[in-house]
Length: 170
Image 1 (cartoon, helix red, strand yellow):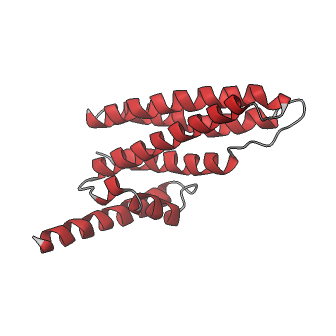
Image 2 (cartoon, one colour):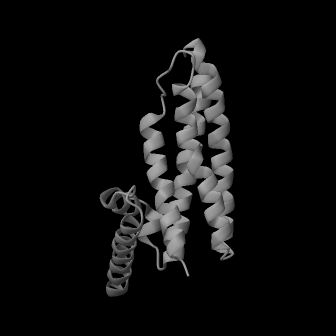
């Protein structure tokens, strides 16, 4: 029993390592260390037995991140402690994160149904949210500092991993 447990864990680790190496090789924006750390830190990824399992885990992770960013935007707006010029980009980001979460949830449904091209469309749609959010702050009459920059960078990396892994599915 112990051997099976250890063997299953080793298989998941090898799957994560190999998949991240391929993902990083296919997309220069994907950092190998970030990919491995993110997936190894995700309990669902640790139990992955296939690339499809890894795609589901990474996509769920990205959806959780967009949900978290949506809550963050909502909290800032509710607290009304922001520069006047920031209200519009904050509301835009809130909508972008809402849409991105929906797109990622649809992508997970598509992966489960083995509709990988459709899944990639959803992931690609979600991929636009972080950069569009950042642009909204930069393009104000008086450019504003986005409160989401670091999180948006992480989200971009996370969705890039989802896309690369989905592209590897047969």
